[in-house]
Image (cartoon, one colour):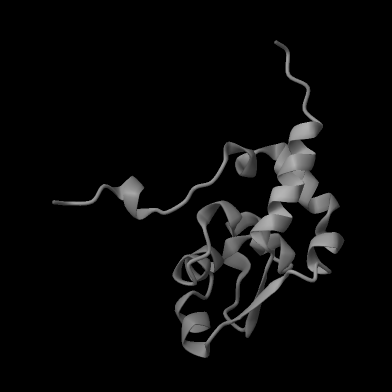
Length: 115
């Protein structure tokens, strides 16, 4: 039985990770994110760097980083675009999921919902 493309894509996460509000929140908390003691540092082999030169999101996918974290990981590592990745980085900083969940909580508390 064939797998659907959506099943193969992995965890896309909550909708909050794809909003303009999330991006603004991450941008305003980059220093805090980068200094987190729970940051995971993952090594990138030269082969992986070469393979995904110009495709940072592709490298993150191969490293099994969930898709909803891709943009945030890109910004934490100082990139503004996935295509800006030159393949020369030897490590990638990945914020802990618990750290991102704290930011999501901040994001959700700042939004007023009309009921």
